[in-house]
Each structure stands twice: as C-alpha cells, then as structure tokens.
Length: 148
Image (tube, rainbow, N blue to C red; front, side, top):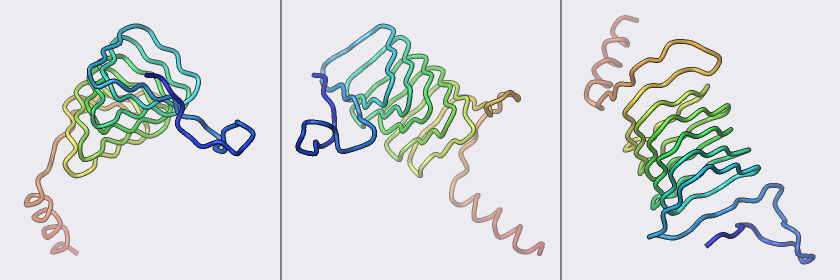
C-alpha cells in the first residue's frame, strides 16, 4: 500500500511543509530503481537503488538492501548496502546497519548496531567503527579525569 502521511487543513492540501510517502506491507518485497523527490518511510523490504530528495526513514519492520543517496536517514529497521547522505544518518536503538556510509554526521543510539565503514563527506579515508562497551568507556573517562 502506498500512501501519504500527514494531515490536511480542510481544503485537501497538506498542513505540513513536507509530505512523507509511506510504503507498507509486512510481506511485500519490492525491487528496482527508485527516485523519490521528497521523504519516504519504508515498512517492507526494498532492494536495488534508492535516491531520496529529503529523508529516508526505515521503520522497525523495514528492510532495505540497496545503494542509497539521500539527505538524511533514520534507520529503525535493517539496512544493508552503501549509503551516501549529505545530511545526518541516525541509527536508532532498534536499527541494524551493515555496509558503508558516507556522511558528515552519524549518530548511533545505545542498542543500535553498525558493521562496516564510515567516510566523512567530501573525501577522506574510510575508517572502521568500533563499539566501546560501557565498562571500557567508564574506565577511559576515569583515566582522563585523573590526568587533569
């Protein structure tokens, strides 16, 4: 099912400045090359190539196995592939990401998982990402605090 999220203001036009195209279908699998001018929320499985003009939202039930170009991304489900984001990428606590991300800003919430490489937009080397557990982080904070 395809639909638009957002309320209307009485004359049938969207009350919000941006609309969000939503693709829903728990058992649906869509493959191909997609060019979305605005934002999109995905609640099914998509494969192929995806170009998004604003924000890509992968819901908790969403699975995206594609090369993606977007401005911003919020990943609450599963993403596999290469993503180029000119804005911010956020991996939520339920998000699972595997692949390569090129962005200026990557935020990984506690509980979120990322396996792969991150490159800062505008060039630079690809660097591995390591998960630091809380015990190690506290140890490092205490060590830095003792040096001051």
